[in-house]
Length: 204
Image 1: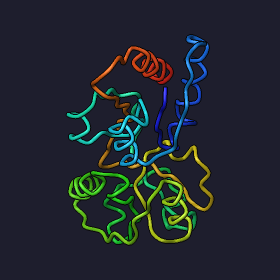
Image 2: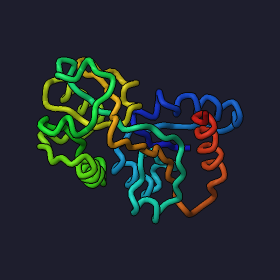
Image 3: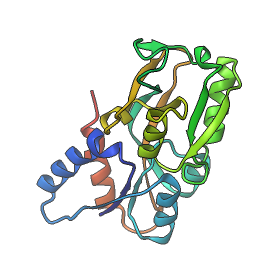
Image 4: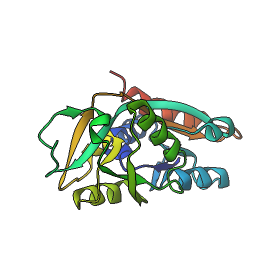
């Protein structure tokens, strides 16, 4: 089973799910490939991977592939550790109206622009987007380097994040879906067993 994944999936549920799957199905082999969501979509289309673990699937992905939610995680606010709110546990998104934002590239993370536009509208703000990062580690590095603040899945806190602080986003609240996608053609029995193993490890 060839699996494309975002780095947050590995400590979040993928490593544990892989161990459980290998014990249950010792004849199976799982390979993993770190890719952005857009790279995962293309690799899935070409048959280079069997499963994409790509966060929240956009409508086009839902129509083209089978999808299933593996996990849910809240959206968090990421600020430099010297930010005026760095000592707080949580803030409203509206409190950051005057801040510059670092966001993820639309090319690598399709539909990111729409997600942020909706959130900013709900918060009643129209902030400046300063920089677009091509990956999650790059996003953390830019925030830690003073490039701005960011919105990111709370699970991202499990990755190394020197110089940044994760804050709970009090209002508006948003739960992000971490989903698996796979092709509608061919025998998907092993793939579905793998995805169910991942899901079983994330249930409360």
